[in-house]
Length: 93
Image (cartoon, rainbow, N blue to C red; front, side, top):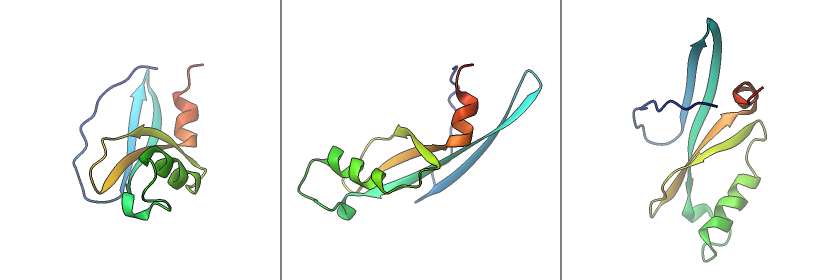
């Protein structure tokens, strides 16, 4: 799969992103969302942050899959998800 970087304006909190692409006259919609996972919401705040992310993601909506984990801050880590329907379309055939 090819990649194209598209700048997205920064908004605080959750972002719901839908992108329409046209490739060889075929229109497809790709659906992403960005959520902020706050460290103070970890069940074990003294544990390793990777374990915290894993635990928080285990409770996430199964219709979405992790696409990208952004750079963490002292307060949160931004995680980009792609809908499973969009991900199916992105798979190499």
